[in-house]
Length: 201
Image (cartoon, rainbow, N blue to C red; front, side):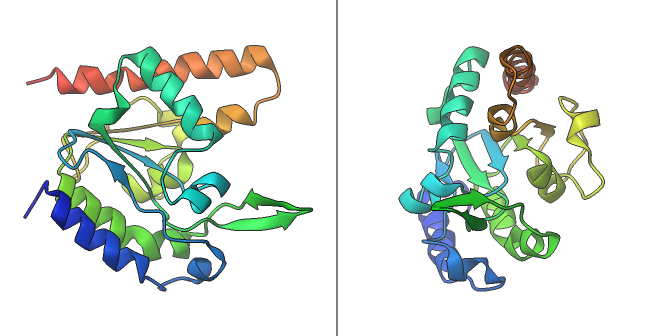
């Protein structure tokens, strides 16, 4: 039973009960994927951030808003995508009153991989885009280096077209405006590969 909202709802419900790694204990909620259940394109990020953890939706914080800008510039409509994360709970550390992102450990990525696999199995996307290093490790493999191989299609059993690019949050951490603009241009160029892949026979 593929590409149905009902099937995704079943997986989402099961994921809410997951306690296979410790991250669930400090998270507000499981943040499952969202978007078009018939999507031809799936974007996979790292993990929910602070806003995503509170709202229960992926890519609705500052990185999500930057992603929306980049998708718009690339001519890709987000409403036709399915967006998710490799890890479904927010991993954070307290700094003053702020909850700051902490990179998931490999064991946490591995524990959550079952949900990503089931999302991919249900959606059956033609294109999968891994956003950032953690997502690339989950989707492509532990040895994949986004800094070296971003923007390159790789062979994968998960979808006909798979590639990785920067996570939008990486751009938000850049201090120099010129550097941010150059990275944004690169991100848009990579996201244009989505349309290129969809146009292939």
